Amino acid sequence: MSALLILIALAGDSSGDPPGRADSEVAAGQVVTELHRSIWCMRQARNGDYWFGSNGNGIFRYDGRRLVRYGAADGLPGDVVRDIGEDAAGSLLVATTEGVARFDGRRFVSLEPVGPQSGGAGWALAPDDVWLIVDPSRYGPWRWDGRRLYQLELAGSPAEADHRARYPNVSYDPAGVYSIHRDRRGHLWFGTASLGLCRYDGRGLSWLYEERLTTTPEGGAFGIRAIHQDRAGDYWISNTRQRFEVSPGHETRDGFRHLRYRKKPGLPDADADTGRNFTYFASLVEDEAGALWLACGSDGVLKYDGAVTHYPLPAGAFALHLYRDRSGGLWLGTARHGVFRFEAERFVPFDVRGSGD
Image 1 (cartoon, one colour):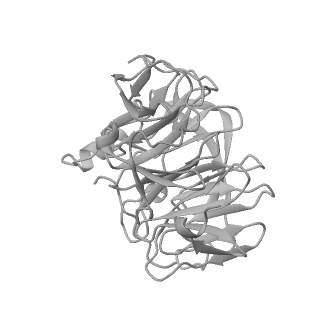
Image 2 (cartoon, one colour):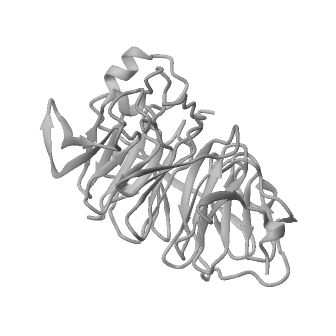
């Protein structure tokens, strides 16, 4: 395994018509010719537009012809974007480290959250709700139900007391959320900075903690950056050493709800720290054929379809965020080298100037 240094990001009512594609006049934002070099999240909206969330330069919208950048001056609460969602009405939601805004088709309008709330208040499990990552260093998950935005807290972790006793002066929230995944039963999974992961089944949170899911062999803090349930029903969590078979139920021990699970082998040649295919991954997607694609930081991208294929990136490129668009195309956001698309069996840099109609 090559050294994998992850960039740790410790570092109200709304109404209106569902937004569609904006008209030919740009009402807000700035037309630009290049994306920011640090892209942490991506999404293709229902109308076909691509949105790219940057680490410090706002969000970019590409409609196939024109690239527009929106920042704090255009209504975003901040310029550090951590998540992008779309609700059932077609409203785009952008989560920055300073809060969440809704795009009305022309500009962004900040949403005032209800919260923070723990326990049962504000928690619900509805298929059309949008769950967002705002700032992993400070917050749990945020939930948009189409009318209100709820700021929620993860409570009841069996690992929290021990972590706070060992690290009493940490400057971040160990229960801050780095990843969100909806499984095949419709349950929500949340990966935290230091307390492992938990599943919300509509009734409560059940937890799973193993130190090596959160910390690397070198001792660095990684957190639960990625959770994915594959077609066979197994869960891939943080690293390639193992996958998890998780029971739909839970057990209560010492007053805490624990997930019941067993571990299975992960990728071949990944059972040892020095294994060729052992690495931590920051995101994972599954393609239409069932192959798994993993963004592995300085290790580039891995594809697993029974065999493992390595896709290297240019020297120094750090793979952060993999995304499958609505037609199945693969995109990759990196920490300092911009965006790549998978074409002709390799990841190639995405250049807006050469991709328009």
